[in-house]
Image 1 (cartoon, rainbow over the protein chains, first blue to last red):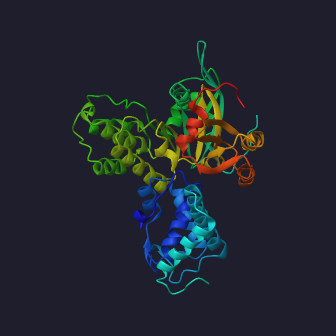
Image 2 (spheres, one colour; image 1 turned 90 degrees about the horizontal axis):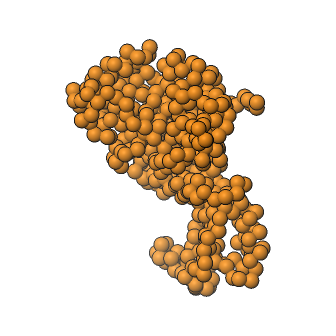
Image 3 (cartoon, helix red, strand yellow; image 1 turned 60 degrees about the vertical axis):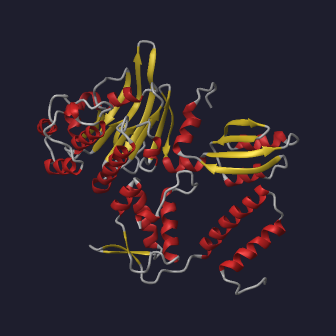
Length: 134
Length: 310
């Protein structure tokens, strides 16, 4: 898993939050399957060359929110049934994505209508045309 | 004066330390403290006063005024006993060049009351350090690893690293940090590090101090530091300049540069609200705020000697 996590020093989010969100996404995307073991704090800190306290903080938050679980003497694992993303978090992820897309659209000078059409098209291709415009 | 009791006990620090060499003021009333388990990075350009402060902390130099503190006591007076609990990686490895690594290890092990010979041997094996070769024939990276292994030998309560990765290549630097992080994980060592490798310490240091011409101009948690600095890029129409400028000023703009192609401002008090106000000014076009790396922040704070202290 270590190789799936990257730290971006120019990301506005603190490193522990970057790790937390990355792990969360890997879990919800199914890349980290339920029951998979995650690297120890020491191992991940060494791989990323960051302070172990930062990794510990991310793991603690993931444990508190029921994404990871610590099994004494065995290590840390993805729980068997991870909880769904919290509403606030879904909203934030959606807003972040929308913001990035809107910025791109603005920068190349397309109209909101054009941008929206493109979004629908992307949606359609990803869901292989199961829903047409609402 | 204001010795507030903080959450963790202070392991090392400076209490209004001033160092003068004739007329030159190398350190100017520097006060800072490193609490237990913290990794503190002291940054500054060459000649900013880092080395003088390190020497004071290690009891190698008596400050002109003020006190360096080790474990709550005056470092100069208690250096003999205090240094038993301190591991040091000096800027220039100071091992006798003709001695072999094995001889240096044996020598150092006798200097300390506490010495984890097994851990030292393991570490040196891991790094493939040839033990029977004179130290002068080791590569820079190997010398660095040897020095770190020796510094960790006495299981120190405080690790003082004086620009430890200077001159190391990328791989040696990576190994050095891995080893340091491993020790942090295993023992929670307190670390005081001076360095020019800002990218290297960015994820490791929890607190940062910046020295400029002997003065400590910044001393804060890495997280709050990174949260309040932003680089803002924007275009602007000539009309509504004053309002935009005010909005930037309210965010503590350190400087604004640019011309017809657009502007870049570095602000030191970024906030969503203040930025929202700036971005919605009618004269401002396509603003974009980006978080800054430690290196970028350092350059903004210490890079240019601009007149006018804030």
